[in-house]
Amino acid sequence: MNTELINILVVDDDPKLGDLLVRYLGEQHLQAKVVQDGIQMDAILVQETFDLIILDIMLPGEDGLSIARRLRSHSSVPIIILSAKGEDIEKIIGLEVGADDYLAKPFNPRELLARIRAVLRRPAAETIKADPTDETNIHTFGPFKLNLTNHSLLKGSQLVELTSGEFELLEIFVNNSNHVLSRDKLIDQIKGYERSPFDRSIDVRVTRLRKKLGHNGYIQTIRGTGYLFIPEPEQAPSK
Image 1 (cartoon, rainbow, N blue to C red):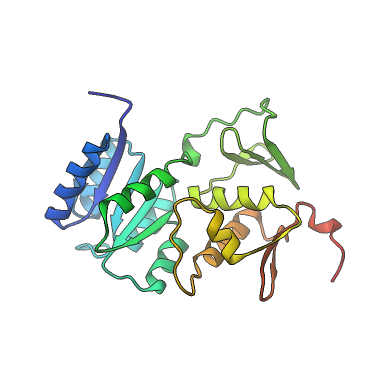
Image 2: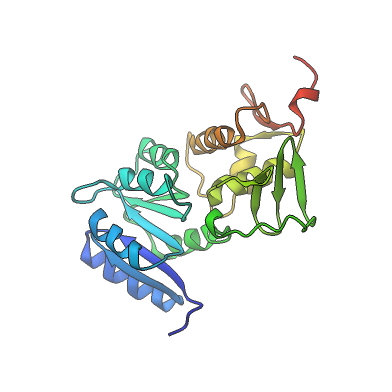
């Protein structure tokens, strides 16, 4: 067996969809396994490590949002949520509990593949081995060091766990420090992101990122416009 294959776990109780995804992802050189609920997921995670989890919301027993919240409490494994519920509120809740992306059913398998590849561009924080001697592409702000080479964020010597979406958003902010970015501009720059009317998911990601940075004023809201990243907020002119 090719040990280099990406290993994906699908948690969905629809056997037809599970079989379809296993076949399709296999054709794309991605290895997928399917379980039908949270209990089966917990059992297989004890035995195997996965690079990404595709998680349905409507599951027997524990629902997908609860599972995503539980997974995120101890792991940064990338999560893509699937659901027949296409409402914005479900998407927002999914991102709030720590999912990296959200895709409503029915969907084109090619779109799912594109989202998988976009999410997997960023390794999970728990797999990162940050090299403190590597000064290439390191951006420092406050006590933080953002390393664009190994995709890590350090606060002092402590690794800050970020989802792939949070890391990508922070990278955009750091590369555009002291410049106001509109929500539309942020959406345009995020890879594999699908624009939707009245999209609030950027605001959700900003909220989660602020919490991980400690609410120190690095990301400021510019009312009616967007967001401004200030590397040294204590040096910013008072409003």
